[in-house]
Image (cartoon, rainbow, N blue to C red):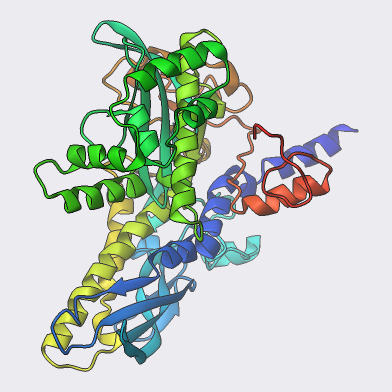
Length: 520
């Protein structure tokens, strides 16, 4: 290969599209699939109409959502295509209208359902990333870009809000839905902890399984104060017999010995008794029926929410949760017996990166919930005044627009995070590229996270060791290495399993005709 060929490869590899490609790919995936998935999760907007006697219930059904390309409405009411340079010069937001199919439906339960009004309506405006598929200059040639005043070398990958260029910082986080075992010092004693960040539909719940100094296992999860006895919780989930609980944790004699200590100290012996005991914890002082109802609600909603699957029976979901907790217990015991090492939080296999599309999905989810609350209020108000219930009169598009634009303009994101969106560093061209490939840690700058600031072996080839700031941010603000490629989450696991099976991989659970190993 001669030097000219090498230069050509180098030019192609470090091209304008490639340097911010992870932003484009993530945002395009959000526009094409992510938005619709958030709408499908929501499905309907329920109202309080129909609570009174003799009144028919009313709800809104949500359908397909689509985004067009950026446009601007002029003073005379006409709508024109908007280009990034015009948005910068006029201090306006480079955003596109979002349309959604909505239907107001009357009836349900006993009455026959009747569609009162069904139409596709504008629900707001979505800021569009410069250079993404929905950007008006996405397919322009170099000459066309120069004609409209754009820089042909500009990499894109940022948003324009009120004339300011804002880039969404790629955020580093611990991998969700993965068991991490570690030792912790509590009250002067060293205890073993297995934890998992269970994440589903934007909700993230930290579930901890701890082995106390007495050797007893306790589980803590959201909405329950303090810790719950492991055996009590597993029995509440449907694993009743001692033999089944021990077998599900481990068949190792030393771990069985630990488990027998836990079973001897168990407060309850039956599933009903376990749910009653849990009810007394989550709703103390209330009536027995309410306690039982609340206990069932808490274990279904807040305990390991990522194990919920559409179309799976509630009993099967609970058993899966019990099996998962048993796996966490086994991790604690293995750590106590030195059968495994503590998981390294700084290892890159235990981390995930949230790119523009993931951050926008979180934002769109909260914006849609806000819009749903407003639509509910407007419908109830129109019904009270005996007005015609129509989609166009109950949807106020500025509700969604405000919720999408304000966080990008300020950097204050949902979930109490700040500094997520930043002004693009336009000091020089390299500064822009560096900013688009920057990575921020959620750890606090004021605390001395020594290990997180160290250079880790797994960052080799992924993270640039030189490009990190001096001072308190050292090691917490990082940058991608020059030749780094960012892989994306697989949306359809079944498709991946079929692909692997086709390549001759054996023992894949859930694929017909291929036997999974007994312990899988």
